[in-house]
Image (tube, each protein chain N blue to C red):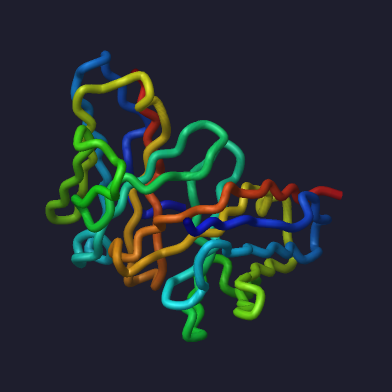
Length: 110
Length: 119
């Protein structure tokens, strides 16, 4: 089972701001390991949105931003657009499991 | 542009071994971490394991007893073997690259291949 907890769903009107939380523990996010975020459109592979807590790969719009504090991290999407409808996953490393872990996933509805 | 492509049988019988290959094109298999990740239908992502080009491997504790990841540098390919499969192993299987340049996030993914475990 996932060790990183996300809300099952969030929704917002076009143009609004939504945030997705990712709650971990002292063996993953709280231990200082980086958090990464992925977007998964239906029927496609996940796409990297944010790496190293708050960095955007080339091509990812600055409407998306990431942050981390304590044992949690967040992804914010501002100026919500129809194309943002997708599933979003956080990911980190867990020292107790000695491996990578994903969040439970959040469905964003616009 | 580096691309990954998974290949292998789409149907495996219970108790048999699931075998998949990931072919890396447009770049070398060296100097990166290469992972297998799966996603059961309608569910979330699960990391299976990875290897580093130097030869070290790491596996998810929950699958460690059944998983082997190996590499063929001459073909720029790496492979997954999962033995004693059950219906719970039915999933889309992805191969992915993790790069130190992006804090070992998974920056490149294959398109995924659906594997069904059924008799």
